[in-house]
Image 1 (cartoon, each protein chain N blue to C red):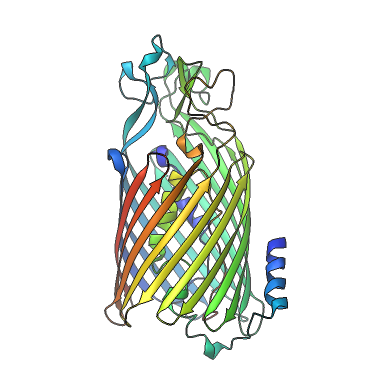
Image 2 (tube, chains in turn blue, yellow; image 1 turned 45 degrees about the vertical axis):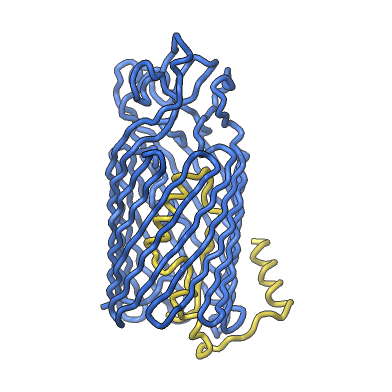
Length: 381
Length: 70
């Protein structure tokens, strides 16, 4: 369901890094539960990594999500809990923020091929697809990793990504701006498109035998239908209609990371900055620590702090919007902070078999909090 | 690009960067020194959550190479 449309595909855009050369199969179970009986996600996944000689690595990932629960938006509650209860409401007291039930299955697959040249530079081509009944996404990505010095202590890399999305509005209505007049009257479905272009440049520098630093910058541009068809706004205090975000967005930012090993303890520090032309800025601070208890067991504990400013077209006041065309009451566009508390365990049973377990708690300064859990097995062959 | 150039210059001019030989990279080859956590699928799942629940994307990630072991 498009309520959570920013799919796993999106995350693959930004996680390009050096392909690890080893043959393995990994099976993972992932579970995500929000407070207040909102969104629940169960996502089993499979990853296969296979080397062909020393110059080629093939990586395949498959994920199947089952998403269910409820997501809050403003509706005319006198007509029942549906995001489609839009229109002029005779009694404004019936306009309330209420959870809209949904259930959706999602399938994701990606394949990436890394080629290493004689000088060990790497070229990775990847394709991924995410499919839901109302959302279809295709992503193409190219990453080139270039070693600068003979000792391979410094590398540059560039990643370019193009993503094409098709969004299906299942039931048109006159209060959804994305629907044509005829579709709005008949209640027919309507197809919308969006696309994303993303370029990222990075530098990795080994500082000494036990530390390294990374820096990257990115620029991204999106265009098309960037609204969420299930989110509504309230206009003049008595009209419920579909939100309308701008149909273009440009963003840029940079990231810094520093990894340091202190014997049994490894610390990773990170900072990320983001800015876009929706007037949103964000800062992300991370610290992750891994303590190697012995050669088999590693404990991980980390924190992530995130803060963002409000989009220029956002308000949570039902009496705020009057004549504005671009308007959203999506809480994701609001000003908030968030903390993530992370705990993980990794256990190596033998040369071939290892296990991992992760427990995380996510807490936003809005009323959202969530717990997510993962358990996995990795087999090297 | 200016951030990258500035960082290269900072590393180089400050003299804090050692020329680490390949046989001195046993620590860099450890799983805990790789990008992300020790499980790439976990990291994707976590990024997915942030993408779904937060209004921005991209600021927190860093790409790039690692130990040069491949």
